[in-house]
Image (cartoon, rainbow, N blue to C red; front, top):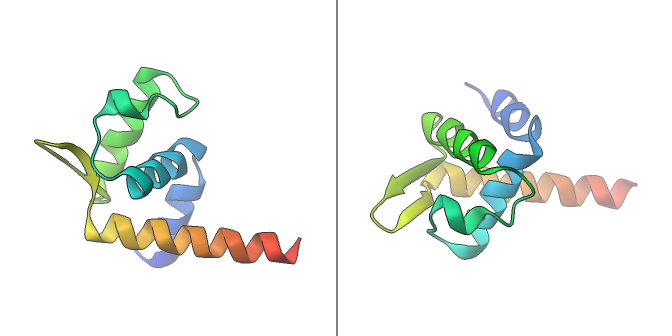
Length: 88
C-alpha cells in the first residue's frame, strides 16, 4: 500500500480521521473515551478495527494508541489539510 492509498483510506471516512486526531491529541484511550466523535459506538468500533487492521492503531492495556505509522499518517494528513485550507 502506497502513500496515496493510505491517504485515500483515511480521507474516505471522517470517522477515521477523527479517531486518528483524537488519539494523536489525547494519547491512549479506550473506545468509550472516543464517544465525542460524532458516531455510534458500533461505528467507532468498526473504525478502530479498520485502523488496527492497517497498522495505524494498536489495542493495548492502556487502550488504543497510535502506532508509529499511525502517528506519521495523522501528522501528514493534518499538514495536507492545512495546506488545502490555505488555498481556499
